Amino acid sequence: MNPNNYVAIMAGGIGSRFWPASREHRPKQFLDVLGVGKSLLRLTYERFLKICPAENIYIVTNYNYKELVAEHLPELPIRQILCEPSRNNTAPCVAYTAFRLYAENPKANFVVAPSDHIILKEQAFVDKINLGLELVAKEDILLTLGIQPTYANTGYGYIYFDKDSEHEVSKVFQFTEKPNLERAQSFIESGNYLWNAGIFIWNAASILKAFETHAQDIYQLFEQGKEYYTTAEEQVFIDKYYPSSPNISIDYAIMEKANNIYTLPADIGWSDLGTWRSLYEEVGKDEQQNVVTVDNRELVWCVDTTKCMVRTPQDKLVIIKDLEDYIIVDEDDVLLVYPKAKEQEIKGLTQSIKAKLGKQFS
Image (tube, rainbow, N blue to C red; front, top):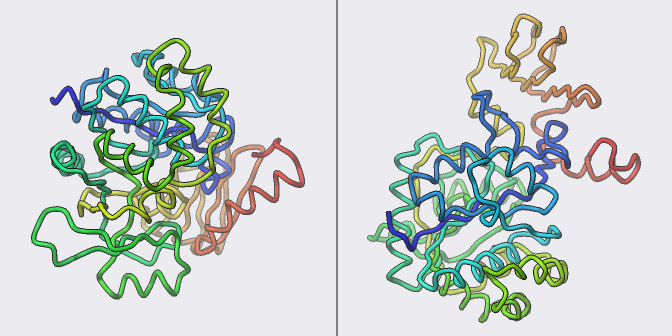
């Protein structure tokens, strides 16, 4: 393994589109949503152990989840848990991590990846990541993994790329964040677009140069702390200055502006597990095409019910009649029955509930 290779796993989100299973006090990255006895964070960490040594894996999370990270990854030293005092989207997260790793190793190449994705073809994933790390160590490029789209998903970002490239990486012409259904369908039909997996690979110096060029306010903010990174004063600096960083994604801050963006098309069995539908697509189904994520399947009766996503408490008898393409999630204090086709509304719904009822159900 190359000692200059690092991984930063982002684990600070709430996963509101996965509500009501994913809640503010225990987001989906800390849940065993696949029923394998391990949380999504644990699965992600173990996957990256094939890329770099454990001492080069960092978790970037909200300060409120520091103890949860330590609970799920007890072998990880506390110094490798980078804590954000506020949620300011992915650009400040990446900038902080880049400065931190550059201070530790100016030759650092690193992967930035979410903590709550599923990768079914792990060896193919490892091969693509290793190839990407080799490329960014030699060239001043910013890489993103691109996934061949299978349907017009309005919750993903899309990459317009050079599909006729003769190389393993392809030039990116444009990023489009979460298009409407009509536009997403046109992207699929054109064959010129990939899904943006949100998994990035770059050299620390390259991404810092991109921030200095395209997001100077973020660069200047975190550059002030260069003498504190890797020291005992690092968290003090971050607690003071991080909340004042702009709330902006890495896609908007850098990827839509830089001219050295490339994509590495990857067939890795990827899903972001961002919604109930994406979980439904990845989990085994019964003869009625329902997904029921409960151990005691005999307690869930789906009568004339098809293509539904069902999650209920282990000891509750549940009878569902005459439903098709619905999400049914019972979390004791919250019962959600919602059309699968309208799942993108759930995030907005949780905001309305919080505004009306407070944080009790968020």
